[in-house]
Amino acid sequence: MASSLAIADQRLAIAKKAKEDEELRKRNEELERELKESREREEIMMKELQKTWERLRVAEEAEERLCLQLGELEAESVHQARDYNARIIALMDQLSQAQAHLPLSDRRSPQTSVIF
Image 1 (cartoon, rainbow, N blue to C red):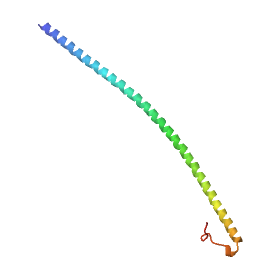
Image 2: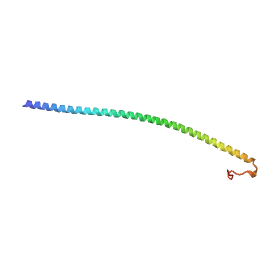
Image 3: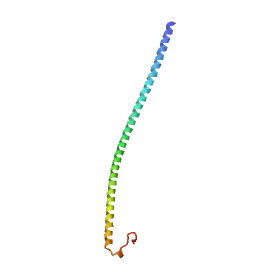
């Protein structure tokens, strides 16, 4: 009877060990599956990060081009303003010279003259 109890205990220990081994195998498979899914998510995220970096690079290049164009436009507007100012001064000089040649009775101030 003692040997049958020992055999029963041995079988119980083997069954318990087999159950633990099966649980560990299942847990290992679950962890491997989670690892695979995690690596797939990581790969997707890396691809998204690369796309985002590319979009950022393109946006920065566009910003640089726009800043350059803005600078060129500002320089052109300053040049045009100087030309316009010089033209106004030249026209004022011409008007002054023309008025200087008119008799005093024909001279009118620019503020009182009416244009029709």
